[in-house]
Length: 126
Image (cartoon, rainbow, N blue to C red; front, side, top):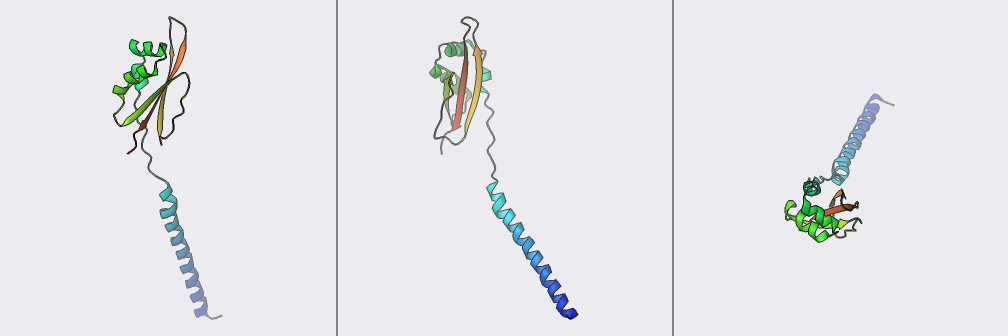
């Protein structure tokens, strides 16, 4: 085999390696990284700790009145969020993409009962 032929084969193998690297790089950049999206950050609402010490909130919890708790929590939550409150039993929310949950455990001294309050919030569609 002549020197010229060996040089030509070495050149072709170098080009093949370069193209293989280039194609792999393009695949990683456009296919693999495209699947990695930027996730919206979870809102830090912290509604239930703000309501925890209020007597009207505790009265609503003792009465197991979820509507009353929703009315008290609404001013703390941005208008573009929907909310749902559940007491003692976790709720099954459907139709929302990302649901954020807050939970608080309330114990009363008068009756000795305890309740778990679940607050669900999610962005309105559109």
